[in-house]
Length: 287
Image: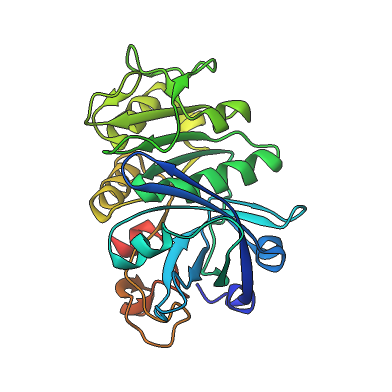
């Protein structure tokens, strides 16, 4: 937790909006041209962007993809207030002021990473999955949402042992990358597990023998209750777990201390800033 190299990565750029797609449930996918930031971005980091020239207070948004070669980043977000409502009105060709990449990224050591994303916590898992694929590893990804997914789910052609009958829905992008994925929701969407992401993860973990399970690490981003359940699942199977926290932020660079959370350290409980001490933490130290 003493490594601070990620704090030297932050750049300030005027990014051009290349695409701005709309999905059901007030969800938007924003692609911006930002060569400097895209070259430095790592899975788990986020951008802090100005939603409108007349609104100086920035908004933090997770990075879903980054192309160092082509210089763009994808940002998936949901309208939840006035700021993101203004952001949703921005159009291709406009420029947007952003700081990125910010925060401590995921660091994967295990051979069989299990990635779990819920709601607007899905983007970091997609970014991490793509990064692991480029490193020659194939994670298993479980995504959950209580509003329509920001993509058209399709039946998976990748066999995943331990899935309940009929749970075949997958994210097309991950499927195209040959990365197995499955979907969960309480909304009874076709092909999805009707229940929680952690229930589906438990199904999969129980199919593994002790040797295979020892190679698994959990990585998650999503709402607070979901993250707490993921850490509980990691305890149940005695697995390492990293989580990316979602918090309201003002400055985004550690100055205001408005996003602090209590974290267990070797010296005892301490208040740490989600923006620069995280957003990725050891799950056991948070819960």
